[in-house]
Structures are given as C-alpha cells and as structure tokens.
Image (cartoon, rainbow, N blue to C red; front, side, top):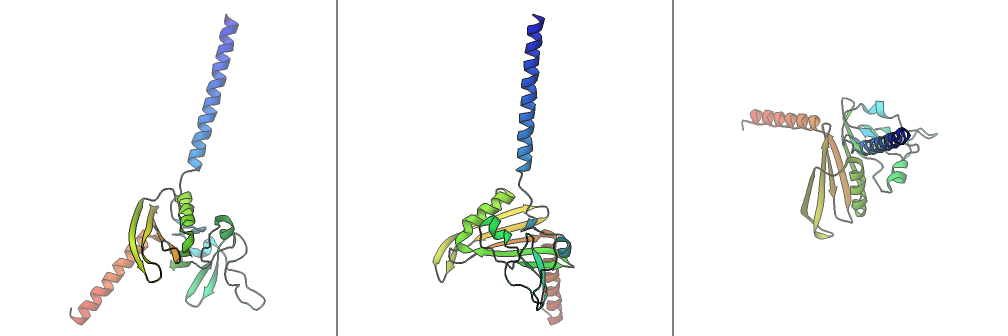
Length: 210
C-alpha cells in the first residue's frame, strides 16, 4: 500500500511539474508576443539621439552617397542640404515584402528624433496594416472617412492610430493608386511645436494690432 502511495505521489508530482512547465512556457510565449510601443519604427527610435542609433551611410570612390536603399541591416544617415537624412537598408524590403520609401522623413530637434514620416505603395496598404498590427498590436483608434481624388473619385479610406510611451503613430491607408502613409511623432514635441506656433501667431497679432 505504501509503495502504491509513493507511486501515486510520484505521478502527481510529475504531472504538477509538467503543468508548471507548460504554464510557464505559455506565459513566456505570451510575454514575448506582447505588442511593442510605437516609439520605434524601422529600427529608428523616437526620443533618442539620431547618431547614437546609426552611423553615416557609406560613400563611393567619388565621395558620393549611394541613392536609395543601403546595404547592411540598419538604417544610416546622409548629410543632406538641410541636415541629416535617413536611408533605410534593403533588409527592410526583404523582411516586410513592402515597398517602403527608402528615404523616410526623419525630423530631429537638438539631435533627437522627434518624428518619422514614411510612405509605401498605396496598393500595399493591407500589407502595411498587417505589419503594423504585428508590431504594435490592435490599433487604439480606427476611423473610416471619405476622400475625393481626381484619379479615383470618391473612396473610403481607413485610418488607424497607435499610442504608447509618449508617442503617437498614425497609419493612413489611401486610395490603391496612391501612397499609404505612416507618421509617428513625440507627443511632447508636438505639444511644444503647437505652443511655439501659437506664441508666434500671438506675437504677429500684437505687432499688427489685431
């Protein structure tokens, strides 16, 4: 009887150990699958110094930057006429199968990235949406509105919004023959920009006596 009890106890302990491992694995899988905050796009982090995230794009023998997508697996910057511009690696296309613009507009303030404005082929808007949902989970806001185009006429357009970690990301799915847009920006920077614009407007009004 004692031997039987020991065997039952051993079986129970084995089952409990198995269940604990299984639950632990499920929790780990769920934790790993948690959506990220929309503060990083294409490996570019908003709120971080641009040059701390990437290096300068390579130049050819004539000292010129190669146009379009760059080699390697990280974005890099080029010195443009009005400041540093970012170019994406070809790996982005390989990973996403989406024709993103190789030169997204990345805005900085005091060297810190505050906005990323990127475009892709309009006919791929569904793929772009799935890509964003995979990264950031379900959008916090969804909107459908009508848009009048000279090419396609009146059409319904899907707009999605993600928020998190002080960043807002908008996805605007446009008509199929136009571009689809992703815009992510720092909420604090946007508020500061709005405040500065209002102060400038008030200053102009005072100077003109309005």
